[in-house]
Amino acid sequence: MDETLTMAPYIHSDDSTFLRMADAAIALVPAAAGAVWFFGWRAAAVLLLALAGSLGTEALADWLLERRGLRDGSALVSGLLVGLLLPAACPWWAALLGGALASMSKVLSGGLGRNPVNPAALARVLLLAVPGLRPAALRTAEGSFLMAYRDGCLGEVSSLLLLAGSAYLVLRGLLPYRITLPALVASFAAGLCIPRCDPVAVTVWGGTLLGAAYLAADSVTSPMGQAAQLAYGLGAGALCTLAAYYGWGIAGVCCGILTVNLAARAAEAASRAAHRRRSTV
Image (cartoon, rainbow, N blue to C red):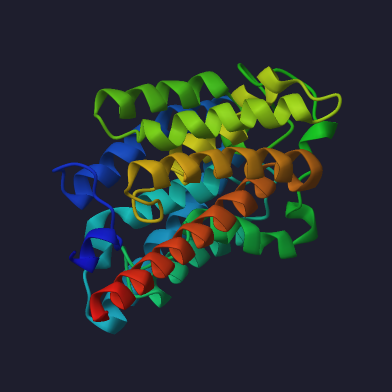
């Protein structure tokens, strides 16, 4: 067996990397536009600064290292995701730093395809060091998750808009249902097990949808095998819900994503090691 079949980047279709990233960016546009509509210029500033940090860092790395990472479009998607994971009241420097951290994590890993965890999720978790960017646990939140949930990050403002973007990915054949659907099912099941938790509300919450359809579904950091994808999705849904409900809301979702990212990479490494041992027998 060729070991390269189990290593990132995980391209599940014949599309080029740039086209996949362009589709992901298009899918995020409704949520970004909704955030600007509900929060105004502050949301636009956060999104633009996160994009500037991500694209600027990627461009600087290309210049210093004589590479072409900016051309794959991943910095655009990472910047958008980082912006959507931040609140409208985010300090300007934190949004810029978050975008930069996302691209920097990818550059330091050796480029797209070698990063072990989702760059946007990692950047959001690192920003937990900023006291003002530690969101409240989900159990303290109230409001409509479907139309205008204003108490969280930009990406939480409207689940309907996130669903619209997810529908676009479905039409393009780019939503890995073996990951996304199990993640949503596990989120609902976790909600059933949590005392005084509304499982429907937590499942349609914007943070859950961002985690299931965009962060966990990242083709670089998710596994390829059907069984592995199922286990990965279930783990992501359960961990993200528990970390959000008892921890830091949307940042808890990112913590859950990083955990399953690392678990998937560890499982792949163990599988390759076992394959090498069998080959030498």
